[in-house]
Structures are given as structure tokens and as C-alpha cells.
Length: 397
Image (cartoon, rainbow, N blue to C red; front, top):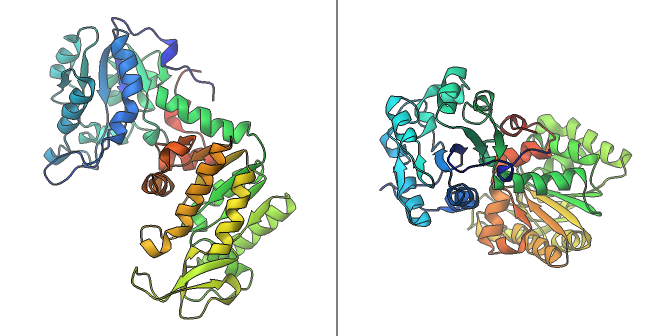
């Protein structure tokens, strides 16, 4: 995806509308508990401010369902952003309307304003053209730096591009496209994909899209049991998608036909119940006891997968290896994160596709050892599936 970026436009003296992802977690008192998403947007924000642009930021927060909800106001974000930039960020009363337009027109070079929560209006998620046009009227250029919402065709991500030119990618989206795009279009080989998560149904499209591109796929998470059942193994009380057995068989055959090494675990950590206190046992995949369920990959599999990762030159990871939020079943996921950091230190390009895998890498304290951690779980998944992301497709080539 060769899209114009923030580096291609003139900001000085212009009102620059920028879509960011400030959907941050708040506690009961309305305090931000993690400002990572705000920090991620700072390079683009600083570039516009320092170039003398008049910056108007817009974002959603939570799910207000199309009406104003006081607890989901972006006011705490404006306060935090003011601290990070060491300058006053003007908080708008709404995201459209005469008052907001007056605030926008009053901005001077280098000043910043944050619009109120876009999703206080039902038209945002409906991608209503009139609403998109009204948002667009606030600015003279548009920058999208919200990768986390790029897979949604909303008024502030897709609709707006029809009414304001130029429409370009911010530095965060540019980085996402660089690493995810390079992995899929021009990877250094061997190229290894690691896929985890609970269900095959959530990863079919990714698997099918990657089959034409990767040298090996390492599979973890509960979806392995659907494959094992399709292969005729007893899987005990493990999670199996009974209606996906035929699909699992088809994927196994497709991998074989395409000479893709589809690696499944050889051992698992099984437990009597889904609980951190449950009795656990490491067993071979062919002999899972009838009263137990597999909740993580075992030590032999960790060793096998780690060796594969260390030989790779490009690695893409999406989805945990087990129930990593429960401490006894986190070892597999953490070990994969370590192997990924070690491979990166040896010169591999490593890309972690947001969501749970990103959380695991952070939890293991290994984020700085990974080439790129995606800021959008759903968006990175759709990108890996080979789908077009409306919020990116709409930007200028």
C-alpha cells in the first residue's frame, strides 16, 4: 500500500484534522490508567505542531451508542495530552456545530484542539456522508493515524476522505503498513507465522492467506484441539469446534499440498478445570486424559517452536499459545515471546499483531525486543487476512 503520508503535506498555517485512537482505559474516577495510545500518536502530533499546523484531533472513546455519556468524555485525554505536550490543548464542546467551527477558526499556528467523542453521534459509526462532510469542513487537510479503527468504514476514517484533500497517513499508520506490508509482500525468508487463539473460525482467513506466503506456520491456543480431533485424537474436555472438523481437515491437506510446514504441538499442559488452582499435568497430545483439558503448549513444543523461530528471518505472531491470563498456563506464550525477542536480536524482523499477543509481550517485559507491535488487534488481523482496510484504502495514493 503506497499511500501519501504526513511527510508529503504542508502543515504551516493550515488546519489539519487528524483521526487518532485515544480509546484509553479509564478508572471509576475518570482517570486514565494507561496512556500508551496517546503516547503512540505523539510523533505525528509533534510534527504538525512544530511545523506550525493548527491541529484538530478527533477520536472515539468506549461505546456510548450514539448519545452523549458524561463518563466517556475525552476531557481527561485533553488534560493528559496537555501534560505530555507541555502546552494547553483546547477541549471542544462537541465534534460538530457552530461553536466547534468557531473554536477551530480561532486556532493559531502550533495550537491543538481535541474534539469531543465522535461516537456521541450515531452518524459516526453509520458513516453518514453529511456528518463526514461537517467533520471535514473543520480542516484543510486530513491525517489518519488511528490504525486500530482503520478496518472500520466510519465517518471519521473513510467518509471524511471524500470531502477533504489531501487525505494522508500519519506516522503510526505508515509504520504499520511498512512492517505488516513488508512481511506479507516481500518477506526475508524463512518466513514463519505463529497463530494462536481459541478458535479456528477466527483464523481461517489468516491461515488461507498466509499459506501462499509463509514457509512454516506454528499453531497454538485452543484451536489446536479442533485439528487434533479432525486427526482422530481424543482431546478430553479440551475446547473443540465440532462444526469445524471438516474445515480443519481441509486446512491440513491444503498445507500439505502447498508444501507449507504446518506445525502442531506435540505435548500440552492439561488441567482438570479452567482454573489457576486446578491440578495440572504435561501430556502428549495423543494421550490427553478424558477428564482433563489442554490449556497451554508443553515444554517439548516450546523447544520445537523456539528452534523454528530462531532460524527465521521474518516472524509474524497473532494469538496466545494458551490461557496466558492464568499464571500456570502462561509459560508457552511467554516462551514464544522470548524466542521472538532472541530472533530479533539475531537480525530477524518480528511483527506482533496486537490484542492478546501484544499484551503478553508487554507482560513479559519484552516489548523493546520486538521490531513492531501493532496498535490494532482487529485491523492487523484483517490485514493478515488480505482484506482491504477502508480507513487506509480511502487515503491518497
